[in-house]
Image (cartoon, rainbow, N blue to C red; front, side, top):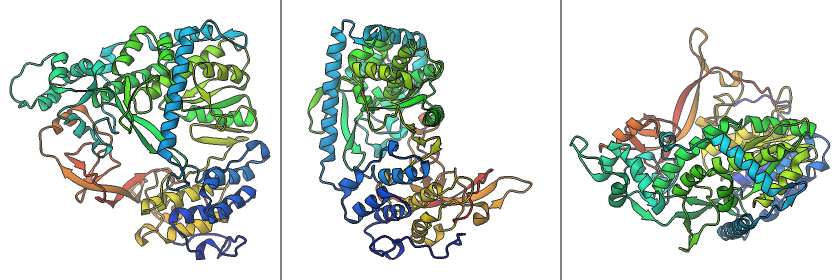
Length: 599
């Protein structure tokens, strides 16, 4: 592949005199980090480069930068990338039992929720500044009641569905809706069982599959309590598991009982719709990102991030803030207990956790109401408020009040990711320094296959884009290295930026794509990971055709199903490890942006 650049043989050298291109490396991930650090400039880049070569991975993931120590976006951008690049990489062994750390944080959150429950039950107008917590919570309660309106199971039931993930009894390997509808003994908690039975009764086809009845034979639909008694497996609660997060800790999530999750999806989607009426759009992060940029430039807005927000929503807080009909509905399908990996059963002090299908919407609702209650007592010109989960943006002038109220309600502000002064702001995955985008990219998993190499090369190219025109030549060596170890058939630039990392992206004159006649779209070639299809010949797929698209299914070509598609086609992906391969994809695109040459 020909690349345009000013230096014919650029080689970035460090004190040991060896370059990226002639150095033996332990892995592609190691080489990638080595090359990125070599391209960056400044003290932090030198430190990161040295720590990597010495295999001091714990010190490397602990590396951080203070935005207040920088005066221009360019130097901060390099240092920030070096500090963040490998901070979420989970495959380094740094002598920490990550599962134990995650479970300890889980227990700590439970202790904090218990303290919050006690405090809220016994509160007698504890003060925060000139207001009382009691008055602010009461104001938040009225706001939530007005936003939600009366609860209706008729409205929620139209939104019931299965999510794509694992449940307490269904591993992610068979997390497709086909298997969940086909579960012969779906699970639910005692409080949700009859409600789940009623949900099944709404879909006669589902019931006939569950009961083993010939779909063509006449039958009388039993009540929800009969279905619950005869066909639903009662469980005590959800199953607490840990998943990789970074080199220092895992993340705890709770896999909900199958039918609890089915109902939770409906309630969560209903809350999401209600929130849009008050300006909180959980389907769009751009408002938060736009305000974060403005905050970094003008300082009038601050960005707030919370630690373990999902695990800090206490039972008493929900009961204090939500209307009785909504509180009862959420109570009915939540898991009151959790089963730890050790087999120990805990009775939750929190209301719900990550894994519950309405947790994200519920916490967003609560944070919006609390911050909005504080804003009612602020009379400054800046009145904008944005909430997306625990990513919160409020006027800088009210940060102290908001922090105190959140703390009183059991939430902890993450000091490392909260910014109320200085030139830096961060929200919803976007990072800004004095209005300039300095968002880094992260190595979240090993670069161990061609699609990951494409992601790495494209990430370098995106990062290298200069303001105005051209690509930063300091990062050309690492880009060329990544391209050189790709399979030969995947080294050609063939797609524009913005369509996903399906192949190496580049300028139009590099890709030379075909174009449809009469000014139609360009057609590019990409690659997707696919798994061998598994034909299903039972009658249950009729349920799926009736209920609509399944999020993880797709088209089938040459005996393989595309994991990235969206419609059920009469076959399922065989997700058994080792069954995958790459397939070519031809797709149209109308716009093709150019980044310019390397220089």
